[in-house]
Image (cartoon, rainbow, N blue to C red; front, side):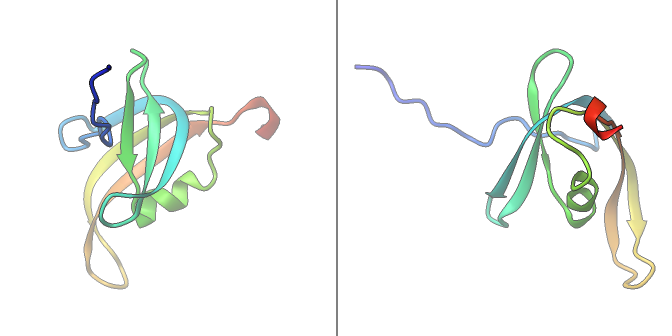
Length: 102
């Protein structure tokens, strides 16, 4: 009989420690965690996969990116919303469109 191993969410990107993340966008998981957030899985160059928690800003930016594209996410720090004055974590997101999207 085999031993059971608990499956967790996996490694997640700590943008405070590592401000820049590059890799290939491999999958999107929905309704993850207590807030039913999106989780974007990125395969880094060393072939480890890390999850990136979605937010309103990141969810919007990922809408234009297809699975399989190379991406780069840069954490810009805290910013204040012009309308609300609330602080949020700000990111720039870059991608290399696949040949069919060029």
